[in-house]
Length: 490
Ligand SMILES: NC(=O)C1=CN([C@@H]2O[C@H](COP(=O)(O)OP(=O)(O)OC[C@H]3O[C@@H](n4cnc5c(N)ncnc54)[C@H](O)[C@@H]3O)[C@@H](O)[C@H]2O)C=CC1
Ligand SMILES: O=c1[nH]c(=O)c2[nH+]cn([C@@H]3O[C@H](COP(=O)(O)O)[C@@H](O)[C@H]3O)c2[nH]1
Ligand SMILES: [K+]
Image (cartoon, rainbow, N blue to C red; front, side):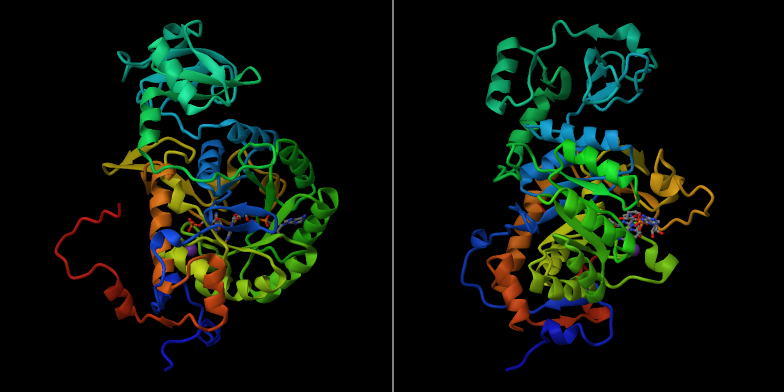
């Protein structure tokens, strides 16, 4: 009985398919959802308990995202759209967030004016105006909201502030809050504040799904990745991020099959043989082959598939993401090189498709950018609470205090390959990522695959069957024909 198509046949017909174009035919269930394991490899030597990676973008991955993703069992790659010293400081900060909470307070320096709409009741004043830094004092904004006052005039000193070491656990911190009848406690490492824990935030944390095995390195701290370019100056950046404890590096490029990247891979492998290097981006088998030969420990796949990407429009190159993931994975798997499906993920179904088509992890930008842990403050747009999200190839990102990559080229004409936008508030990744993973497990169960390696076996043995959806089938597969509805996933 032949029904549907094997991936090998479906993806060799001359079409570039993306996730929404294809659909899997269900298989046979002989295990419960909870028996599905999503544990996986990011790269040759890094194991994750969930297949999720936060993209190296300056509106996605900084310290709080990195700590939360690692606590969930995934990982974040810290962007490089800043000086190498700043990138190193973000990595150290992420590793110091033992309790992975993005606090609902603002940080400022004493010379600043109080924000008219602070994020919470307190504004903490530090020497640098951000974290990590030395604490100077704090402002209780309870009766000041909406007023434009100088922080210096309303600041209380830190005599009454409870401070504890950065690696205290939740139980100890709660006991301290209780004992001292205070609203918050400040966490310090090497004389600098690394986080402020507010009572309400801790309560919120307790309401989230229980955390499983986090992604922890040999030093007992969160594993964190770092993005790099392929310029000469990136060798110095590499040294900075390695010193800061980066556990893996990503060579961040839209077209990774270049002499620059191949030389950089060889340089890194020679200089730091123990450090995993992720190459990319690639979308074809021959691009992948070159980087595998150069020695990459994982490949990042996707060109123009991202929600903010205009590369296919501007440069006429790229590939539908389902085809790209399938094709690159089919060669990478022969060499034991894990694939990261990067870009174009907007729901749990896309994650299932990416993983089952051969990827070991998915890298996400827009899916995570509206979270509490993403950098930047929430704003209101047409009554909706949103956060800014922008492409790293957008004009705004390219000109932001950055970048050797582009400012070194001031004589050249800059062409954007990305846009600046906003995404809706999604709450904490500590809540919505576990729910998303539960949905992914249900997809795996329907396919009769209780793990990623088993799903890949089904794919490569042609047991897994799939089809292309027509336009009408895609409409049918979505919500349709209703006058109105409310969509709540969990
Ligand atoms: N995944 C995707 O589809 C895309 C991603 N992006 C993102 O935008 C950012 C910038 O990407 P790209 O512009 O591709 O960065 P890139 O650094 O790879 O390339 C920028 C330019 O510099 C050149 N270059 C790199 N190393 C060089 C060296 N050592 N000597 C001389 N020239 C060199 C490249 O050939 C290219 O023309 C990244 O964060 C990337 O992830 C941008 C476009 C598409
Ligand atoms: O063409 C592009 N121009 C850009 O400015 C840009 N910035 C990021 N990226 C890539 O998009 C991925 C995130 O995509 P999503 O938002 O769909 O998750 C990221 O992980 C990147 O691979 C870009 N691509
Ligand atoms: K796109």
